[in-house]
Length: 451
Ligand code: ADP
Ligand code: MG
Image (cartoon, rainbow, N blue to C red):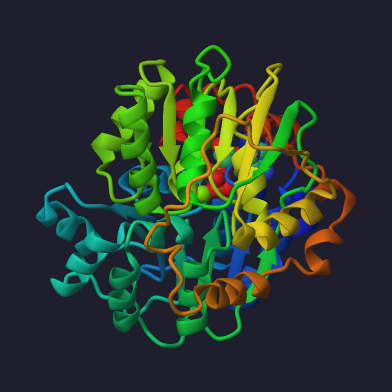
């Protein structure tokens, strides 16, 4: 196993790592280190909780020379203020033995205060896109010295609608710079951003293992269309003692709302929904209600549900197969945590069969097919999207096929394959990489929940 010694760190970094008690770099840290140092553009994909922050902070600090200049040389963009605080905190820990100025800025704080802080000078600025842009427009913040741009949680960034903001910021940055992006998943939006703005970045993807947890019982139903899926859902969810705590993954925001509204008719007051068009407050409330058992059913989209620490889910229902097979693994990993047996149900229409096959290929497992129970009515009603128009399936196929994980995803070193997908993932990682017990950070769990 690689140690931090193998990474060619500087002494100050070696010492701060020693203080942190980390023994080994995580796979993404190990692989990203030389690439970030090389100055090439890079996209790093690895699951939440795999240490992506240090994956870019370590190599950046390794090569950042002491300077007294006022304008920042490194810009790190993250989607939320919580993350600004967290990233600044992580950088400060690593830079403990260096002379380095880090500044975090985000909305909701008086702009003048940030202007003042910027005027004092910094080496690294960590920011949410909106606040960064405001500061740059005010001309207090000069971006002409930025050599490295990091966009962390790119997928969340795009899902939250920051694309336009990002483009505005790109315009203000020097053209000659290194672009560093990190994301937990490769989504179509991320791919589009890369294609439009970056030239051939090196992609580093730490594969999500295709081995499902043994304690998750998977089944699948062939269902002709959306409304039949709803009928089946209504039938299944009627059994409240079996379907105790259900997380339903919807393909997109629109369908999430649609499913929510229809389930509310059938099971009033038992449902909540989260996706990126809902306000932060609404989302927090929904999650709280679900966790506390006030609501039995939570409907969510992939990106927004990721990283949420949801406890003791009895069933994950996949309203559709995911475009990217890895995301299915992320989804079902939400149940079957700890000792509990979890169940996962996948609903598949004819059109979605290919996506299901890719999932089965990744897992090397054929999900047992269950026939739709007799009482469930087969609907002939079609949604707008399902009605035949131009051939929509074409475009769907194109993007999804582009991403059939090639051999690179699977020929990982043995240790990289051992990725636990369950809720215990973070704990496993901590064990594996020896998170020090002294890090009795009471905010740790809170933070994870927010992510
Ligand atoms: P991600 O961005 O991939 O979700 P983070 O960068 O937030 O993950 O890291 C998750 C946790 O793992 C943090 O508490 C971090 O301090 C810890 N961590 C990072 N690298 C290591 C390591 N090499 N060994 C042990 N713990 C680590
Ligand atoms: Mg992160």
